[in-house]
Length: 222
Image 1 (cartoon, rainbow, N blue to C red):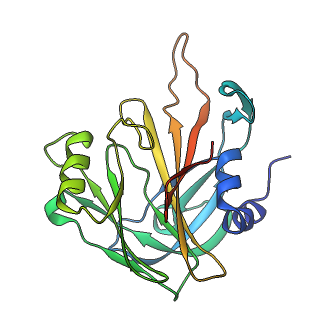
Image 2 (cartoon, rainbow, N blue to C red):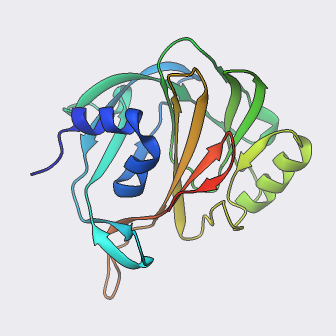
């Protein structure tokens, strides 16, 4: 029996690292400016997989998966409704705008799936963090990553650099989730997934490839 989305949501907030290691997610972000927004978490239809605890991606296991959609684009979907800090995708580094996460409002932050984009985190003080989601404009995801890291040396950037601890947008996508803990501090996580494709000899399964905590420090979780 599929996990109830309400139970899945509560587990995600309570233990985000473990949840993201076990269950694949895909986030469809809000198109409105960054701010608080309603989201719906639903069971995703289709096969999904996750790495094994010992052999990792060499031995994938079947699992469940979920979609998290902004309510504005989730017409007719029934699932767990909740409010999140929603980070808008800005197009081009020149248009990048930061949104401040702090002690007020929801204890979860979401943004749309990364597919060449960079997610930028700039600490500003205890329990406070400026974040931005920026999409390449007239450049590759790798070039954008280099531009942002060069312009903001004090920022932590997760992007399509193709280097260890980041992702390669040619065959991977990334979902970003932030959770504010009981101590008032934010932690940000990135779940990297494959691209499920149909066709002869292709693997249609939607699979978790790795999970990292990317703020306050970078740790590989799976």
